[in-house]
Amino acid sequence: MGCKRRLTGSTRRKVRLWQAEHYEFIDAEYDATISGDPAARWVGGRILIPHVGWPYALAGAKTCIEECMRDHPKCRAITSYPIGSAPLPTRLIDCSDPDCLRIVETNSGMRGTYTALSYVWGKRSPGYRTTKANLSFYKVRIDPAILPQTILDAIHVTRALGISLLWIDGLCIVQDSTKDMHHELARMRDVYRHAFLTIDAGSAASVSEGFLQDRQPLHKPDAFLPFICPPGAEEADRSTQDAQVGMVYLVSNSPEYCTISDTQKPIAREYTSHTVRRGWCLQERLLSTRSLIFTTETLQLRCHTHTQNIGGAHHDGRGDLPLLPDAIFHPDSYVAHESDEWEDTHGRWKEIVEDYSGRELSNSSDKLTAISGLAEMFSPILRSSYVAGLWCHDTLLHDLLWRPRYPPRPRTSGYCGPSWSWASSC
Image (cartoon, rainbow, N blue to C red; front, side, top):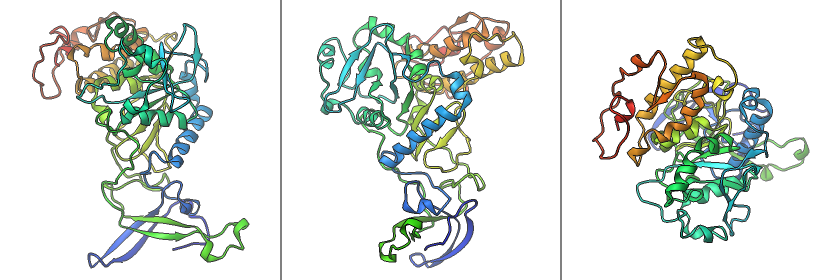
């Protein structure tokens, strides 16, 4: 298969192929390829990239991040600090040398650039965590051999993006110190708010799994064919035997496989993620300036302008977590009580509570703590006292008429919240 021109614009065409294996004809409507394939220069359509950890995928992610910083006025407007000048968390992992990882403690007022990890711990208590006993050793060196795969993958991604500092709760908070836990959990909002990027390990159900494995499509393409790439002007003398060979995928108009490009009819596809089921991960996603999301199917970049698939496959936005209202990121701006903007902000809080209530928490006592960072962001706009998940303004009586939307879980022995609050339904 070859062509004499680049296939820009719509690449929809009917192709009938004989599928000998099943003794039947198949009708393919779209041709597409993967970003980074030699055929990508000539074929306009794109499928979801499966190689999320390969250099071309991470290089594509870096390019999209740079475009966000340069071309998205909304994202620039909500960024608290210019790159390199964000206040640093108390502790960070220095991953400039992957063989000599270590914890660095920052001084008040230190500024720089770092990434943060959003992930699922899993049911087993990880033995790598920072404790009072090993903190001094971790300041000298952390042996990579003791770290679970998700953390090693986050270190790899951070370095691939040209950043050397990474924040991970299990390592940057002293896990057996109540004092340190309380101090650091109170700063969680700022950790994700000021991070240059949040790495969302959505495909990993536990910290031991990692998230850079190649993805397998839920449904295979109808057919795939080798594509002999025509030589460019500088390659005019190259013989056919020396020509690059790419791969073109032929797919039918099926929402079960993939989407192609923005020049064609959008095909709905919801991307799954383990982090969308965890309570703590909600505010980590919403507070982040931008998130690099490693879903179970592909790699995405979410910012405050849009969510896009790395590699150019179309993303229609269905099923995406709604963004926070713009006013949240401008707390000094005045929003009149009961104005449309105020009502929208209050309505968004209720949507967040509905989403959050269906998520899981390892410790029921975290029910209000794990959403407190978002509450702090809403407080200057709603200008109301916040008590156990509810706002004490004139909608309080109505908000007290909540009812469980999800099937009730078995009651836990731990305290979740007062009985009149939605937080008690844990």
